[in-house]
Image (tube, rainbow, N blue to C red):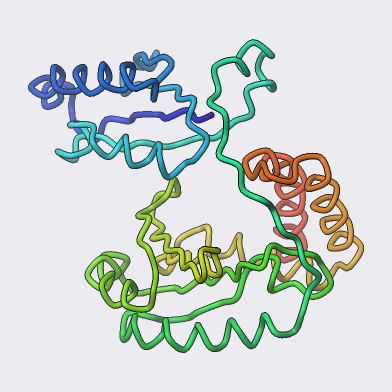
Length: 269
């Protein structure tokens, strides 16, 4: 289930000529059961849309068709949440999620080899705009279980250059997902034999999420007790919901946020 916060980028008078088209967009969303409810923010600076969708990419694709978005009048921030955290009756609205078996496998040094091979291909495709490239996520942390998907974080000089280089990344087998719910990111996925094998998160230098990802990785590399706890949590979540990826991700959220705080303090103290 997702909540989208619409924030105007221009004065209200520039919004008005497109308001009727925006309302038609909302009506279509209701007709398709993509939206549950929508309304204005109390501040009058935007709006909110609640959706029963269970995949962020699907919701992001629908929101990209909003006339306010098309004409660069507003931006959306997408927030995922577990309905039962607010009230159990919310759960009746959520769509049945697509089932996807969650495979957790023990750490293997081969992941670093796989990362290095793919990083060389990405570096060539990104060319002169690339500044750094990092292996992140669970496959970059020795000793913990992980889904066999390698996460890669390239840092570039200009994120707009990445949009022009999308064909070069597609030639490597990647699918472009846009920001995919994280402003300032360019997200790409690669599948082999029908299974996802790589996630690529590209950020422009200076983006705050760069350090967040790297701190998280480095902290768990150096704090084995927390790394082991993370591994145990993931195993327990898969036992509870072996094919519900959204519930699996939500189950990790509180732990991940706590580790991010520890990692920030660890790095700065």
